[in-house]
Image (cartoon, rainbow, N blue to C red; front, side, top):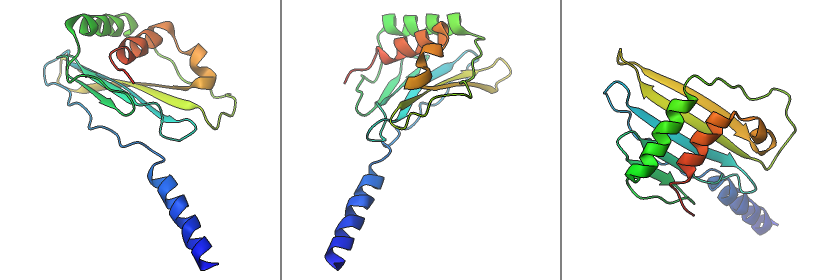
Amino acid sequence: MQVMIVAALLVAGSTVAYAQPPAPPALALGSTPGSWVAEVTTTGGYTGRGAGSVHVRADGSALCGAPLQCGATVSADALHRIAAALETARGITWERPTARSVCNDCIVTTLTLRTRQANGTEAVTTYVWDNSDAEQVPAGVRAIYDTLTAVARR
């Protein structure tokens, strides 16, 4: 009986230990006005570990979290597409609907945009959605997500 209890605790403990993927260290925001960092992170899903993360900085530095992979820098073309998507979406406000379906195994996506303002402060804009409300995400926000995730591979 004691062996079964210990085995059950070990299984439960190992499941909890792997429920969330280790987050990669965030890319630092540059000190120059207009600098930006765009990040997509995910959590949830069947394993609770999400579907990976992508972080890109205005200078082309990149960082991906498992299971996604990317180089340490993005191509000039990819960086141009990301910057264009950021500019197009500037000022879009969107809040996740309060009335949502219950989705226990959905992937929750968080898109965070950090920008250095002219006065030196950091502006942060965050968009959050899951599989059940992804169709309601504004096209400009979705374009940023698409351009960021395009630099990563599984």
